[in-house]
Image (spheres, rainbow, N blue to C red):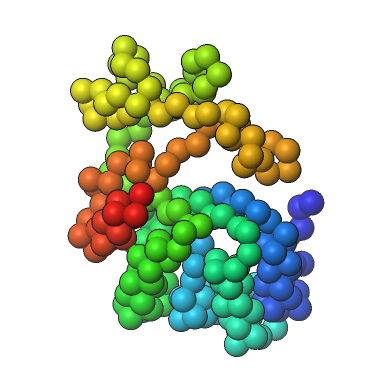
Length: 214
């Protein structure tokens, strides 16, 4: 149901964070895309405070910053406990958007490689400089395969093409075990399928860690 942000936040940020914590506790698989900011559940306390301070100022709502940040940090416990899985995809811009000052940004970026060591967390980065190409989905027997539009289709699933890309078949039978509310499109993109060569040196440590654990 659509509810405007100003109405949702009319009593401050704490209540909104508590509502998110309740929904998240009942969610088994998280598929989370963020184009501009680091996902809230991955925030450091300093980064969260800077984001929520701006929210309080913009919407002119009651200032309960400390209480809101406290609950937001409590939400992170779901990363460590329970039967939950997390697939995060960030646009590269999310790592560049200046939140707070340089020390806040440094602390937030430094925290991400550690989160990648968690067994139920996957994090992918979409490079800003990567050339736009359409993704097409085709069926091959009982598999569905995602590939870049215009790519050479003469190779078999799992075999590298001259451009370095790989078509990865997905076992739809196994995919049924990962249903969320009874729905699954049968196509899953792994973080290692996303090109990493265009990220600058400030973010390479995140990707290097990801590569060693994939």
